[in-house]
Amino acid sequence: MSPPPTAAAGSGPAAGLEATRDALAASGYLADDSAALVSHLAQQLGKPVLVEGPAGVGKTELAKALSRATGRELIRLQCYEGLDEAKALYEWNYRKQLLRIQAEAGTGPEGEPAGGEVMEDIFGEEFLLTRPLLAAIASEAPVVLLIDEIDKTDQEFEAMLLEVLSDFQISIPELGVVEAQSMPIVLLTSNNSRELTEALKRRCLYLWLDYPAIDREVEIVRLHVPDLDAGLARRLVEVVGMVRELDLKKPPSIAESIDWARALLLLGADQIDSETFNRTMSIIVKHRTDLDLVAERVGMRLPAAGRNDGTS
Image (cartoon, rainbow, N blue to C red; front, side, top):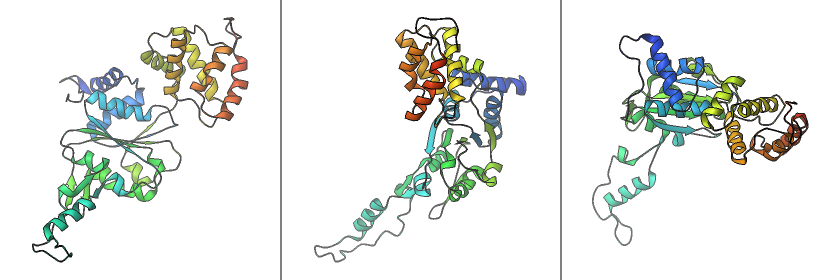
């Protein structure tokens, strides 16, 4: 496993920041200034990062890119409503504990005790089922821990996280405190569907990610679809921007821009006219009511098939 990128000796803090940016770019993630800075500081300061922004702007991808760039395993906790400690931290293997008790106690044909002492300690590590948070803390090798969509959980779950985020340790009543063997890089993502607690925010560095500017999104699209014509890539991003300006249930994500670019390349399209747009619109628009709105507000503004006059 390769070590995380660091600046060369005597190269200074700025070079270390650039090394982080370059490592992310080499991993397929074009980080802007703020994303590169926070990613660098997270590694140097050992602080968790809270990444907020609309769905589909690359929050989860940043964690994946950090995993690739640093050579660390990615451990992901996908949050959802009702998530509890047993699914996030650990739980006991009750079936295995019961089997051990029965094996130690023994029973006769009628169920009476057959001798032997019941094992007193069935709360050892062999009976522990590790979940993502404990796995990240207990890992001997450095990892990237992604706590994805933390805003889908409740405040009680946030409170449980504080020990992990502050001290990088987990208290297990039956075993004691499990401290981090190596410092994980921790990213928490939020779609900002609810306000997170101040206690959680206080323990984290903060990064807001929004949809990128046109030039940056063109770079991202061409990084992932290098064979796409530069002019067509720019037009694609401009059209996606027009779609995002509408009041939609789900605006197109950057990943969907990339998917659309791949589809246009596969279809051999050399321009985005109204016919091409209507045929492929479902790649970037995923709700029935949104389809009608986008066809009316955007599709009608595109040139007819066979025209390449720049009409918009």
